[in-house]
Length: 338
Image (cartoon, rainbow, N blue to C red; front, top):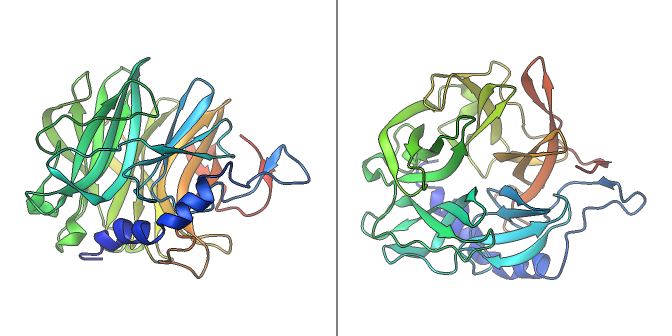
């Protein structure tokens, strides 16, 4: 998918601005089943909300996603991961080195009661590539502010840097994962990892390559990395293939540490197109009351690449079979709420 990233996020989001506001700005999304309020059905966000990631602060969930509705980083809130309400723009102002219109795949992490970091992909004016920035806020809704004078990560010679994902390991160390956007210039797409400073503002040491596209199901690219530790084992979830095709899917690897080595699972992909949803991927993980859930986007079948409704947000449970993640989805039938 060489050169296809601009259309991937920016164009669809711009065209769908009115749809986003109409669908998300008036109240919760209609995901509860009318016959039984203890159940829900997918998708949990029925408007275009690509690349979702959520954090919990107190009793509220905050979901961040790729730009839309005239907002750089749209944010939704929910009490239960099912009913989502529009909460505005988490990043209303971009830093001076960035251009608006292509602010992709934001992910947030809480470092202290009054300190939140947001990592996001944005158009870097000097290089002409997509690069990664970081912004700080005192509360989860923001507004987040980026006081930097240049991108945190750029790698223009490798196509740019996108899909940043923060991770705090069990020992308290902070890490950042990302992808070099190699498919934009016809080179390999690696997933990278590097240590973050304790304040989350700087990279420490040297970056490490974790994995790249090697398997037939992955097509020309891997992207959307997300680290999750379960029962002591470290899992690297990632998406692969063309974002606007039914072949887009989600897989995982098992890693020895945040710097690897990582070994891809032989059962990949673990989430792929079915009759309920098409091209599911770019997933993140949330945990609630001892259950593990995959939050991801997908197209309605037969509407891949469309702007209405675009990539909706889905929520499906992960069970752990002899230590391996098994995703129960994409689902269209009612299931118990988280």
